[in-house]
Amino acid sequence: MKSKQRLHPLVILVLLGKFLKIWIVPIILLIPGLNSVAKLIHFNVWWLVAILIVVVLLFTVLDYLTFSFEIGSASLTIHSGILIKKHTHIPYDRIQSIEHNQWFFFLNHFTLNN
Image (cartoon, rainbow, N blue to C red; front, side):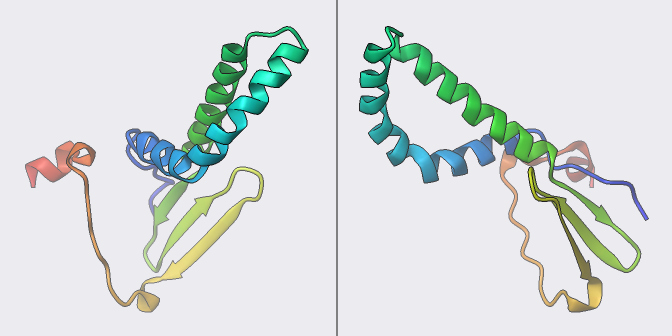
């Protein structure tokens, strides 16, 4: 059995894109509220936006760091979760089909050499 493996670090950009796709509208709607809160506490609204960006980046990196997988002799095991740890064991005989899509920037030296 191999040790835990991680996805390519550029997956962080994909995770960030997924997060922004889900949360962009609520974030835009939140900015006027942040502006009024910033005026109330005599704070610059751009500092609050910067804090919001840091929190988004932090959760994206944490999501990347907490996802790993193992390819064993009998099954594929996926480990994920930030607050709630989830371990999914998938026996090979339960896998019916595999679809492989890979963006050009996820190519590694093994893919290029083979």
